[in-house]
Length: 418
Image (cartoon, rainbow, N blue to C red):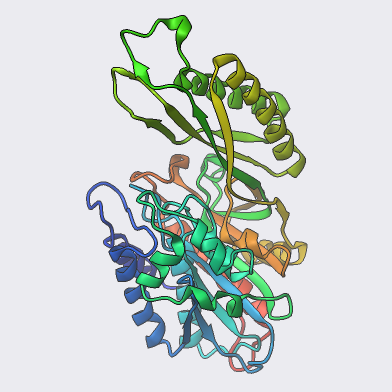
């Protein structure tokens, strides 16, 4: 069996048109008009395959290919369709289209799976709307309830609960939709790498052995807004200069603690954000990631202590707001082996590696065996309009995903496996 490159190209290019920023990358936030268009496109494709489609209260979509043993535990595969602002057309979409194409191929070849296979499209993976990454998959595994969604708010103050409801979903039904470890046999996710490792190594396939954990928080510094010209320097309570120290402090801490831990300040808020006014409040986002949870904890503990010292010295108040996070996970050695052997049988150049980026698959680490397949990002670019992955490499990733699904589904009942 082999996936169809032309269909893969068609689907990815079609979905890339559903953007609020045409000509400036793909911007498709969860529950937006563009999100609705992408969902409608995929729903048509899934319905044409005769799949049973279910959408939960947060907008996570599931499309099931029933097997010969429909009561058996399900194999999940998929990714997300939401993007960052001015992002690329491959992030998330490659995993969704790859799963779609794998199921298409199984159907058209007459393959009969034993275990059900479910394509999953997760809502709000990026956290672009509500500041919490993996929000959709967190609702699927029961980590977020309807009450939690009421606390997550967009830039204009609307809650995820409200926006999900206005988009036609029923967030009050979420507790009834959570998975448990009796219902899932495995979770597989195909994704672009979003870094330079595979591209530099000239490998087409990355077989992921572990995924980094992360913690996202916001540090809010509050001082006294005042006139930029009339306030002497030694009489200021300026949160902006305190924020400058905090930004450098994050870099200093992660470099000292170890080479695998990374820290990023990606967003700054300033009130009133006027050139001739000393700010009254400055907030900075902090994103800490590592394969080792103890390093994440160490950075955060030291950061909080040292930010308190900076705030005291600079005569400002500080507040730490935890936005979300996930723990590092070691992926299933059994599934890693299946993916590795699939790449080997196909003759594709591959390497085993870890993922510094978090993915929806992380949320299933405590529920089932998880596997991830990476394909290269050219020059490592991602989350930007210039994001690019070769369609030849994407097809190879889809083929490896197909083979892994065949083996995990336990069926070769009406056609050869390969």
